[in-house]
Amino acid sequence: MSPQTSARVFFCGGALLLAGCAALPTQFGGTWPLPVERRSSAAIDLARPIVKPAGGGYQIEGYLTRQFGEATMAHSHVDVQFLGADGSVLREDLVNFEPRELPAPARLRAPSARYQLQVPAAPPGTAKLRVAAHDQPHTR
Image (cartoon, rainbow, N blue to C red; front, side, top):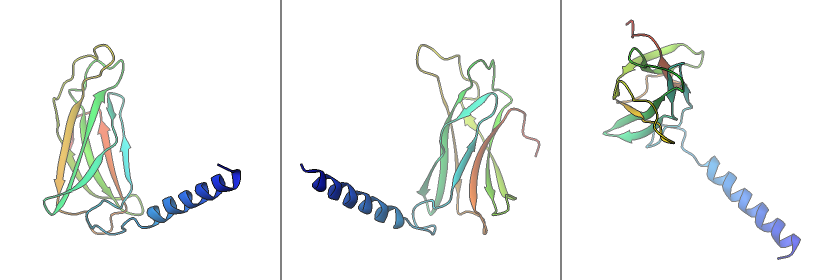
C-alpha cells in the first residue's frame, strides 16, 4: 500500500470515528449522557461505575475491592450523588454493597463486592453523577 493510500485510509477512518462520537445522544434516551465520576477511599477501591437503562429508569452498579494493605472495610459505605453544574449535591443515595467484608486477596485475584441502585431519573439540573466511597458509617 502506498503512503498516499495509507494516509487516505487513516484520514477517512478518523473522520468516521469523529462523526460517530458527534452522534452520541445528549438527552436521557436510553443512554447516560452525563459525566460519571468515582472517588475511592483509603479502604475501598471503586471500579468504574456502570449506568444502564432499566425498567423505565437507570441502574447504577459497580464493583469494589479492598485497598491493598487495609485490614477491614466493615465501616465503609458508598454514596451515589447527583451534582448540579456548580458542584452542589442535588440528591444523595446510600448504596449497600455485598459482601460487606472481603477476604484478603489470594494469588493474583482480589475478591470484589457489588453495589447497585435503581433510579427513575436524574433530578432536574443534574450535570454529573459521582459514586464515592467513605471509610466511616453513614451519618444521615
